[in-house]
Image (cartoon, rainbow, N blue to C red; front, side, top):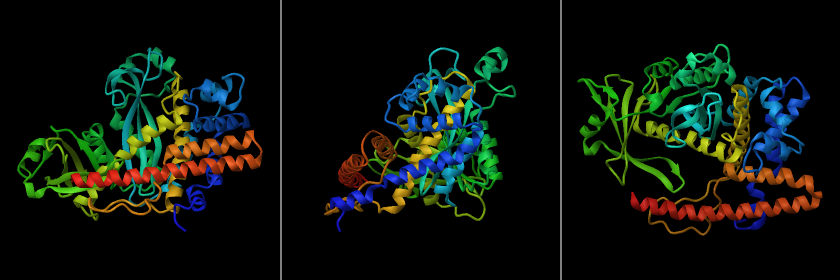
Length: 458
């Protein structure tokens, strides 16, 4: 039966029961973190609110969505209720790894910010954040994404608090920072996160990150000691030790002969394969290289990555290019966690409240990421062109389920059964599934043609 058949399409999209099963699986896993039933129920309601369609996910909005007469329940959950957020964080990590584990997994380290007004929020200050693209008043946190061929999701975080607060004990106390707080740089926070992940027994083959982490020699040494390969971005002025002497990364790029560049894709993008020209430059260390990426359309645009491959593993260009491309998984996680589950919607001020909200948002994203991974394993990928000369197929197939689509369906399936009869609920679910199928088929067709246009340019 062809994919255009409505009955086949509806059956192939997603099981409504799967969404609820995965939600229950995670809420059951975190139940032990709550000593009393009241905060446990509040946390379940908080998660459902984060997964809902409400545009802002503050305590007021989440309380209203849950049916509470005041925001007190949700505010208490974040501030005064007794529960162990470390236990919830660890349960979220186990949940993600349990579904996405791979021997070729990449731990992607990066930070993201949230603009704030005033000076009362924990960790707030004028600093650069890529979210705004400038120096602004904001809070910044370091995150880790676990990325494998099966999927990816955020699994850990640490709030970055500027050095200026070292000399402001009264302000630190007002912000609720722990008594043992000590200033740590972003690479130090990243190493702290990586240490927790590895101590939990998670197998990680690679690490990736931007320039903040690539420039830090202590983080690189830590990863090498753990036998973790890395592909870390560095700046144009990064000193690369070669057999002759140390050279800037951009100076080495100018010495690369034309025949040394290889055109390769580092992964699929929204508009087609992400194709660049790549070159690999040897360094004084036999297991270290400088990876250079050059734009196809604008050859003057270069990016640099300092790489390490442990003994016993292949040091080849295709492997390093693939890991470099995986780094974008964390950017997608930031986009989805902010747009779909309200990672940056918090209006809290104290450290514990911020941390609890963020961990619950990570839990909500984990549910969506796991359902997406399960469904992708069940159903074949849509057709994509191999060359720019390919003729359009008779059937383009369906694009893979995405986090936004899963969140939308979860909202519909969870809500409709509570307000109408079972028969009407079943009809409504079938209606939503058919619309989802149409959208995904339409998107598959559009993607096929975008990919072919991109192939024609390369």
